[in-house]
Length: 288
Image (cartoon, rainbow, N blue to C red; front, side):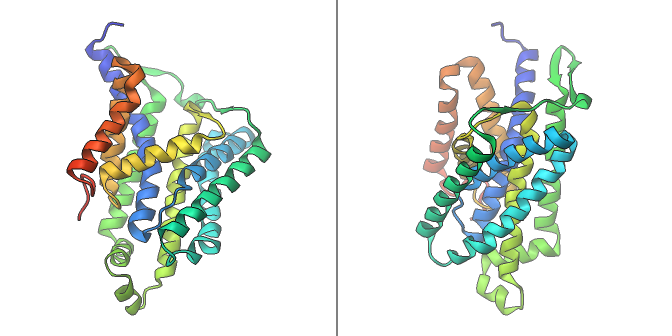
């Protein structure tokens, strides 16, 4: 295959679109981990459940409805899981959190198997976003531009809320000194619940956006949680900006790796993770 500037640019744009999906998925994980200190290994399973809910809603009401309804349903599920399960293990340590997460993974996997079966589920790009742009020889999917655009808006909103609003100040106060924040009359448990729900909501948005261009299969959660942790390690725990940059880097490296050495594409990602762990284990964009 002849490699030229137009092909490289097209691959970079495609990688950026996939990177924004990685960002949305990982953003939820890094927020929950950074604010609450909860090791939620079930995050990929929530993504998988959101994908299948998107599939059902999209077939019944259309893609645009699923883009709204699926995240709302997952936020409500997140509220139930956080209130009913995770609140009981916050003080029990990471081992119990891990065991709970593994249990949730198995429950969600069984639910998906019972309700949707074992056959892969595929979506279709909505008619409005079908086709490509041809810009100076670069073939760019309209849907990729949509992914980059909507994810960028979400990133700006999240960063604004976290660093420019009173709600963000309260969240950061819970991170720095939970006991002092309680002493000031802040409902820390309520803050944790909202953060957990927002994190699950981010994973659901990622799944809803990815639905038209990916295939849903039982077990997809394992791949997604690995990617989410890679992004979190590279970007730094609790850093939304770090998750954004790391997600883009991983996806672009993945795209270019498939072009150059397809059999070693995943290896490049893990080499980046190893390098970060060796030289800056707290993450490139960590504030620590």
